[in-house]
Amino acid sequence: MKFSSKPLTTLILAACLSLGVFLPVSGAIAAMKTDLNSATMEQLEAIKGIGHDTAQHILDYKQENGNFSTMDELVAVSGVGQVRLEALNAAFMVETEKKSLKKTSMK
Image (tube, rainbow, N blue to C red; front, side, top):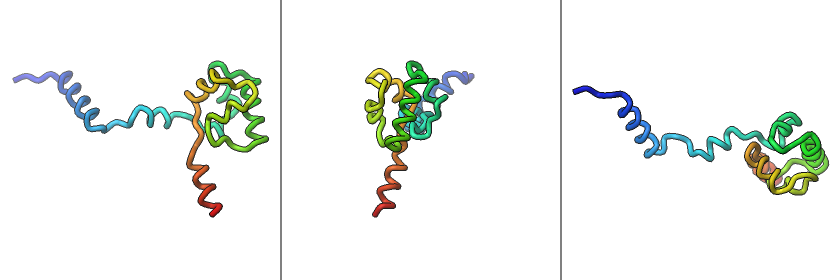
């Protein structure tokens, strides 16, 4: 009996997926995102629809108000509307571990 490796590879992939061996897509995407609070001017400007002025407004806002605790706080930044917020959401995230550490250290 002769076996082909292509169907066997497909079968192994299907088994792995059904068993949940691979990371969920959302987890893999989140792992690739940069923390907005540590983003540089260059990282902000690299996002389509975010120019120098908007990137500078984001950095200025953070300097005046402290780190962002949610991505939705970006709407308070001059030049960031819903469309730019969605573009930033695709590339950045706000690290939640920092917030939880602050809460526990204050107790």
